[in-house]
Length: 178
Image (cartoon, rainbow, N blue to C red; front, side, top):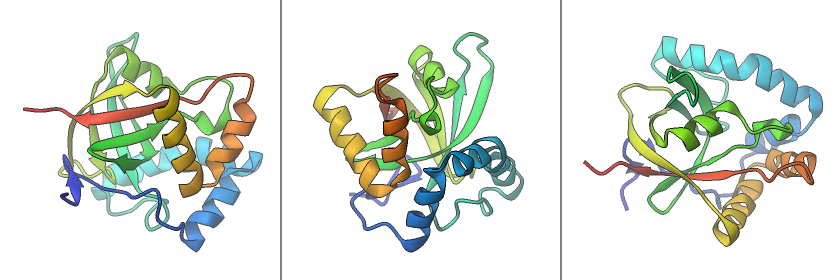
């Protein structure tokens, strides 16, 4: 199995979390930490990645990130967002947690409406490719969500916040075959 999946580094969600990832998970599981990341750090990460070709961002060494480029569900305008990810087999897995908010994130709706998208490793435009997204269901969704909770503890907090409101979607992004 190659170390790259259509230009995206493979990430094993069963690897023991580093001290930094555990600390980040704890901070992101708090209301304040989640809000600060959502409103300040994540938008700044996208800008930093663009400016530095992916060499600099807040998640460096803590959480692997991809820059997801989608087409807007309603507008058709190209949108970008930085997201944590892991891989499962030959798919990239994204979790539409939206920091445990009551609504799905906009990028989720974009992928459902327009499944063809691009992923760039660490925001580096030279490292990535075209993928096709599909939502997971039932046992596959539950298994993947359990893996992300093991990988980054903040996802347990997000699931608790959305319990009874919505089920957090899990998406598989498969490299588009040329």
